[in-house]
Image (cartoon, rainbow, N blue to C red):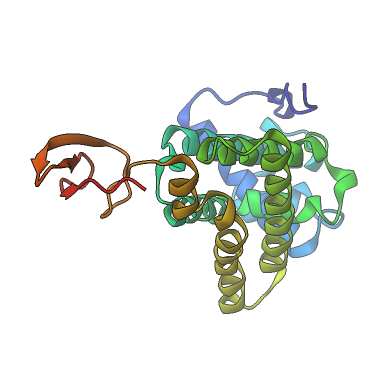
Length: 257
């Protein structure tokens, strides 16, 4: 059990109505902006209330102090990360082409850190770890375990140690690049750094789980047009089996590799 298992205690009271939930989100986004601008030490609940354009009493209605606010920000980040992992599994991204899979992963991470709360929590974790109440290194290990499970799904011939090592390198290297990007004030350069994460993953992982590699190792029949494995037999032509791709609807003659 991680130390953020019982996370609902960060709020003084849980908002039940949509209006209350929206107010909490507004306070958390305002806190992220204040922490980002002046730092956690200099931040006050009054500054946060002013940024949220709400009365200080509204802040105290949900949070007793700024530590409780930051704890709620940790929780919000955790929820979003876990939702991102669940969505990746739900969408079965390991069944996409290799490049599409990497793009889907990187895009999901980029979208996560476009949210102010997650961006500030991530940066603060690498600069002021002592202020964290819920998140610790166990979350990094969870990220490694999640990536390893994806890699294992993508290429079942990988053993546990190998998939874990690949995942560890990917998580730590991407964290370093993302941190550099989030700290960079130049928007254009920040985007360039983030874009390189995809190229980094493609170059590093392709020998282990690229489309051609998997075809060679596992002898998988795939559509030559969209690389889908969702095929059905569709008669014969000149003695060869014909197939119909259920994904793109195109036909092709037997192309087993």
